[in-house]
Image (cartoon, rainbow, N blue to C red; front, side, top):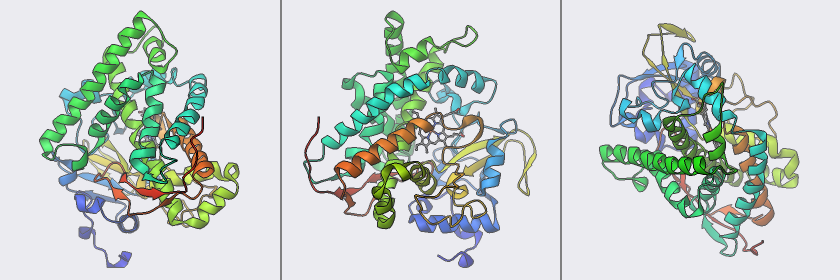
Length: 422
Ligand code: HEM
């Protein structure tokens, strides 16, 4: 739809229908908002169920998203990072550092950052390579697969599970729970009734919490060389993570490290399929383009659509007056296409060098797993180019019904079969 034919009322960010529109239509709606209503108020609707609140401001320009992200003393994360408030009775499992402000956030980030050391990431790097090989081995003789459920989905979750030292026998358990946790309104990932779905996601988080508690007790009896041990023993000024902090961080990691990278990789394959000249360019010299290509996939696909903040006082954002307590949704998906910041923002260009995207957020909550995600993407695309060089999408990607995660549920693809390698 051309921008000029829009009116603000035509854009219904709170309806599921909007989030199932083709990507280009969504992008056109956000371009209209950036130009004419950069901070627009929307009433809450279907996407806020089961507890719709009073509404939110949709922030769509890059500069305003940065302004909110970099001023946590005004724009708080503590009331929740999705449109619906984090219910107080679920804070034990959903109350990790992503929904905290300083000083609690600073303390927790300081503690867990000790476990995300370069040493740990180096150790994980070798595992990432092995996992990519294993995942591709599982399909390579078949000549076709569902790219999401066979490759993009199992890959990051196996890495997180290995990092944390979760035994292989529990990987499916963790995988299923994270799908329920982040499944949103999609009936395939949960029960159809809204309230039941909501309760199921709380239960899934509690199951993960319980698993972490068992692992914590084992590590206290006998330390191991994994991230869980590093977290259990991490110390800052004589202070350690509490049981609740550890459990909710585990829930955050399994969710944040799973769904995001999966969709970044799936969108990457989709985008390269839709832009064969970009694919040829990257394949012509993998190392030369890897860094810029990965950032461009994250910018263009924006796997996390938005994060929320809540105004702690009456304030101003852009030219808009906000009142204390109002919700602010920072639409990364829009900021990442802002023509004031990016040349030809709607062009997918893997050689883009000036790319200040906010796909990993900005400010004190900047993605803790960004380097791991980049590493995972690099390893997987190299593996695909080397072993499935003619991989192509054979059917319409099936989208996840979600307003927070830009997800692909299924994507049929085909390739010339090849040999399993050790
Ligand atoms: C392409 C993949 C990824 C994307 C697009 C992504 C995106 C984001 C974004 C936008 C935030 C900012 C939250 C905010 O400002 O409120 C964030 C935070 C976070 N991410 Fe990621 N993420 C990805 C991968 C990962 C991975 C692999 C992990 C862990 C293994 C991870 C762990 C986290 C954590 C723990 C936070 C919270 C940090 C804090 O509150 O200080 N993410 N991520």
